[in-house]
Image 1: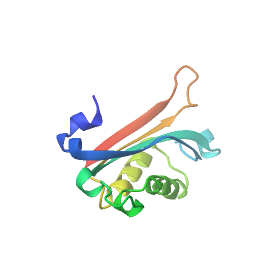
Image 2 (image 1 turned 30 degrees about the horizontal axis):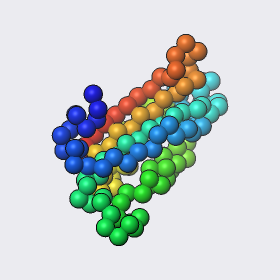
Image 3 (image 1 turned 180 degrees about the horizontal axis):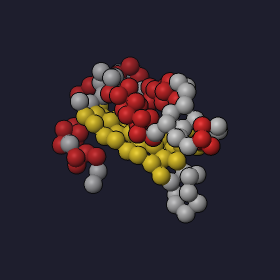
Image 4 (image 1 turned 60 degrees about the horizontal axis):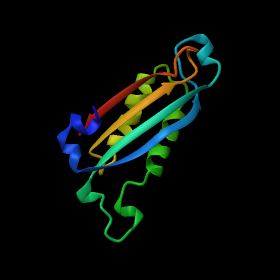
Length: 129
């Protein structure tokens, strides 16, 4: 099921996304995780109503710039050690939803190097205003 199917209001929105953004951060509850950075893959979808994100003059200020997503991630991960992926997802979601043009967002994080027998372990959260 797609995110848009969860909320019919998203059908009139533009999706802006950051896909498979790889960061190395201090995350985890175990002692060995507190001593070294881990690779985390972050995905963000944000939904902006078409009525306020359809450019008329082909200018950047008419849309939500995807640099906003990267800056938001960078600001949060620069704050230091995070114990849980849930905390990281929730913090990113709150910061993204604070943008006045963003109607809804989905954030997921994945740790691809935790177990040798699976692609990744992770968390995903979705919320609309």
